Length: 195
Image (cartoon, rainbow, N blue to C red; front, side, top):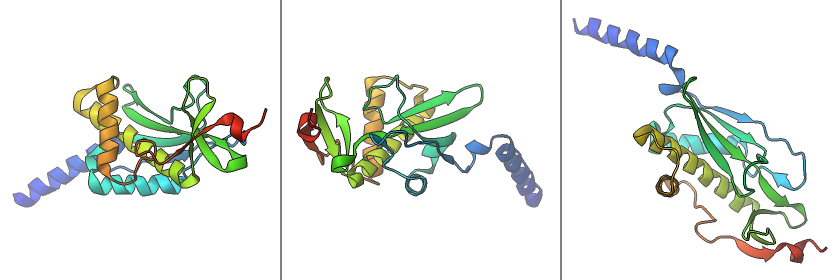
């Protein structure tokens, strides 16, 4: 009788995995859609970096990845502020979750990735390529935090959700976020690019 129970359970689990593949020990599709249209936007991480980070998360908190269909590396969206580095979207009808990671502003003359530090864009926070990589991987941890919070509470937005996601990425302790830890340099854009 015990063997029959185990085989029925196995059939049910196999059927569920077949019907809902991205919910059960699934492989997350990592897609590189980034195009280097301009010398002033680059992607500081690779597909291999993302795979490595996902495996680290899988070891530390495997349930955090449940439901994520894809992680997409892509160019900045024109409707977003230039400092936006990632987004988490849920398609309820398709039962899919997608994470997008956006390229960063880049100054090739000084090999530095930048974020706007002032509203006018004249003052910049600068990151080395290694710091920019860690910044983007921390952003991925933040977006995975959105997945954890959404599955737990159904909430996507709010200051408390954003704080939870930052804390989640930090507590994963996979990389140190150079933005939150102060590992960046401040400079005026006019000092680097003369008018």
